[in-house]
Image (tube, rainbow, N blue to C red; front, side, top):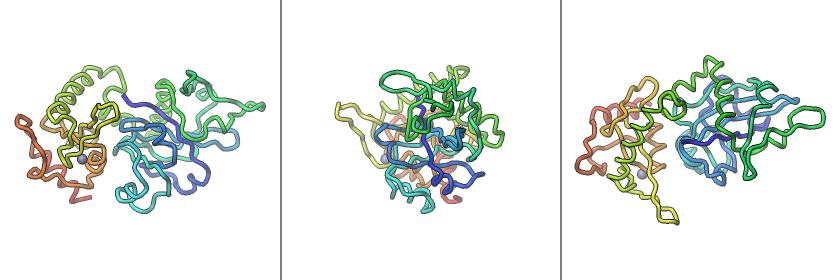
Amino acid sequence: MGRYFTHYWTGQTLDFNPEGGRIGHTAGNRFRTRNIGRGDRIYILNIRSGKVYLIGALTAASPPLSDSDARTLLGEHIWEADDHLVAIPGTDSILRHCREITPAILSQVRFLSVGGQHPLKYKSDGTPDPQSIRGVRELTSASAMLFDGLLDEDSESGSFALLEEIYPSRRETVINRLYRNRAIVTELKTIYNDTCQICSTRIMFRNGSTYSEAHHIRPLGGEHLGSDSLDNLLCVCPNCHVKLDYFSISIDPEKLTVSEGHFLNLANIDYHNQKVVSS
Ligand SMILES: [Zn+2]
């Protein structure tokens, strides 16, 4: 489903991001060129005195947002950058400056490039070469699992259990759920021909293929306990999707495009709208 990336934070970015809260967001200037989209998971790294630290992780809620869109969504406290990624609520870990990735784990990490898989590079003194983890790099899924394991050990992070709720494909044990979900999502996108039910946007790529996303009106994970069914789904564009995820827009059933045969559970829409008012 999603892909996995590392993103390097400099000491300056760390100073901007005190420990303790959820990571929520990251920003830089390489996300658009790497074609990062909803469901891709980003692991934040930093290197100090020859040690590599896993600052935290998040699963992107949408393709990169512009600086002004990110400020509208999150507020003015974020740092300035070309591309902003915001987390799907609940998929982000606690931010820590000193969560060390031990040399034993580092030696198993593999990056993906055009040439295939390659390990971290080391300097002649045996410490990791900072140059080899700068910027944004794609990781193998096995490496991502190692990082998620480290985050799982951090009991307060609690990120992975919820991630699994939202992205059942991440672990094979719930593969049946994945197939059921895919069939419903395909049905939904077919009904609406990839057209956003909220703003009528229909994204078309140069090769003529179209793109939309499925939003669970009452979220599946965490305290929400929404259902994975057609009456709880909207076909939306990435822009509307991220705003819905953050409860920053309400849903007006009168203004939605709803096709014949797609019955929406109005109680779920009420649930969403109450969250918008109370947040
Ligand atoms: Zn839209």
